[in-house]
Length: 345
Image (cartoon, rainbow, N blue to C red; front, top):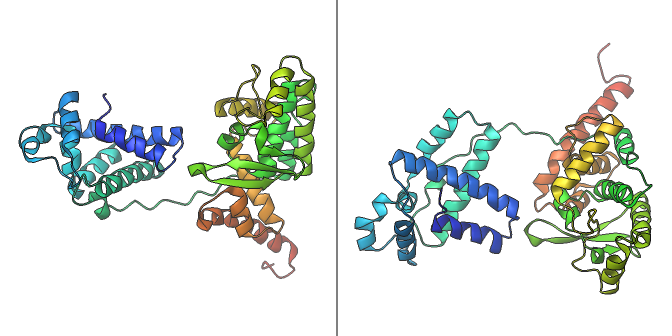
């Protein structure tokens, strides 16, 4: 299906102004394409790219397409139906989603996409009113983040071999995720210049191009130093690494692949899967599980919520507060076991 000019413009807004990651922007785009397909089927419309472009180009600061276009083209275009959508049309689409038996979380995400899209369209002057203001997002059961025990973390971190560069790299990557709680997308985006061994910290670029400084623990620092030592002594990588370091290290990945380039998030996931098998751990554990474990273990050991929020790079404290449910449950278990009058005999 062709990409409509109006949805392409929205995608540009997400990446250029909201600084969404390419992956998140693609997810929004996929949700909008499903909405477009629904409208096309509902109104038996075959998309005419030229007509769609004419409608979008006719949009002015006042909102709706100009008179001639409204009368002749807009009613027969998807763009026209998008602009004229009211709450009833949105509810019809949501009923269509309900027939597909999507999970509440998936449905909520698709509603969030439409909410963001129509808010943008209204602010841009393409529509006179936002139909999503009358649509409620269905309540979801709050899913608690998954965390693993310290003992399981230790088993995982000791799985990579340190006999070669890639093994040391993998150990350093896993240690870094657990030591800092950074997202895997932030991990693969790290450059040599982001590492400060003197201050034992790391400069991280997070969601929405927000930046933060995170401390590195002793074990992570040791693993990173051992990895760098081997990279600098390996003839496959040493020349490019030293040249990049001499130039300041900006733009050169800290964690390299076997060709000396930047790792992908998918590669990190594959490496983790390998070590989970070797350590005999739950195969559903993900890089994000290590991030959850980082936060949970900090709170278990007395860290305050605000500090954990800053370390994780959460914009809202409420996002971090979900971890307190895990620590509260664990506290209750400890209390019930330890206090002589906690439970009825």
